[in-house]
Image (tube, rainbow, N blue to C red; front, side, top):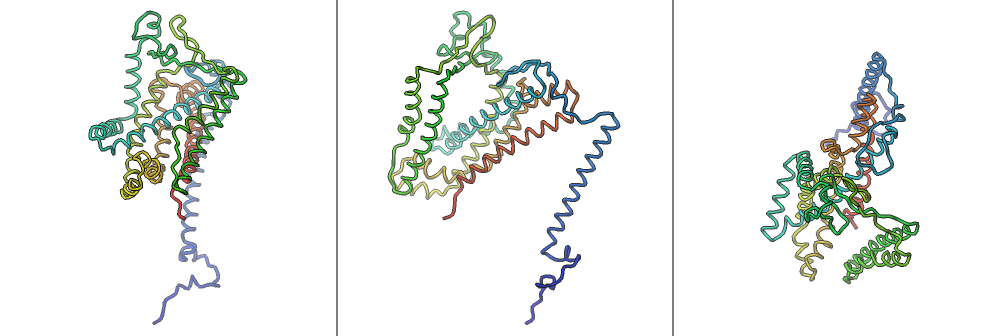
Length: 407
């Protein structure tokens, strides 16, 4: 029997241009290069067309407007800002506001999603059906509607700040420190003396120590089968050193309590109703999707794993924490990255309730005042792209850390 061989695959044969299409060793590279050239040509044509149109209109691309005075106020800022600040500073304020609501919503959505996903698999019929109702109701209604609903409820139901002046029990501060009004929520503001940073540093070290202890306890269980307590030791490691340092240094951390002055509260920290509405709407909406991912991840773990762990005498909570969730994370984490990215992008809906995020500042008032639409939109795209890539990078690192590894 004779075998047919491709002469183009024979070693030592000289290279010919026809091999770029006929030889399987080079054909894929040829098509990739052609596609790259086509894409580059398309972008070059779009760029030249844009430059020609701008030149015909007598307009040039310039970012000098970022150094001009913004001449508008922002209702909530994390850094010092006034109407005389530059457009660049206004954009930074909007960026920080976007990061603030995105981080808060990501954390809250994760907590809600994990609890809802676990409870959906509960043996209690009422609990599982309630969670199923929550998931179906929230994920099938647009998030913009939930933002408007929560914002409307806050402004319509909560009392005005002036109501706290009287003796109305429905308009009294909670614990004498928290005030819920139709303008927002007023909470105490921490005041740090120079030694207060020492207490915060000790608390940060306690967090690291607590994580290290829990990992040590888990490794002890896996390697030696010895079950160490984790709840009370973790709480002791987390709070005892910081509390002792707090009193030893003479209470260097205080609180500035909000006080009613005139028709509004002064002092403390103000959480605007628009921030709270956007925060909780994004969290509850995205939490419904995360709940389904958590449920799918748990169901992906073989039931035999649960039965084997129960046969070893592990309690249900231990089975969930030590057996099921570590294996389910390989299914949960990849779609979780997409949900975090969606939260960040959906935060641009803040303009519907007047929350001044990046879209409201750079893509809204700054764009309208300066008329620099191209420059503003390009910067807006760059900011959102940088945030999304940073989230993807961090979550991919975490995904690599929790995925199952072959021995």
